[in-house]
Length: 122
Image (tube, rainbow, N blue to C red; front, side, top):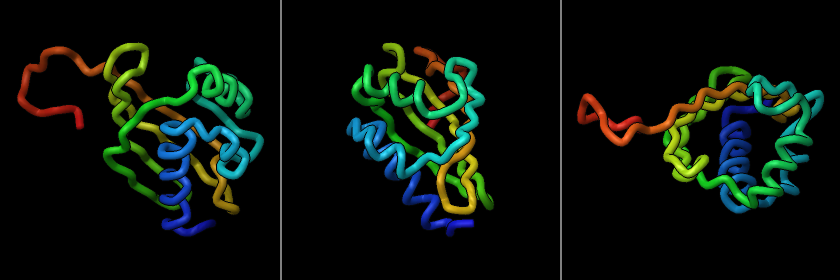
């Protein structure tokens, strides 16, 4: 198992370089196969994700929090322009013994225009 620091560096590269800056060529350094995808909009493997990112160009985001527990990373993310709406997301990644991502789950929630409280989702 790779160190917590390696996992954090990988998350920073994924969100900062691949998603925000569109450096899709870095995906092969980050992901390992067989890559298991739990988001029902994408099949297993990195091909569909790579294709989506190449079409979209970049996926603007702001990482708010990252937690690491063993081989899992939990990322709280703000997506300002996801489908034209601000979205709050939690991504969960599982890493293999070489420190590459092998599995992904996510939960996405649109940020409402109004809230019943003064707290933000971030």
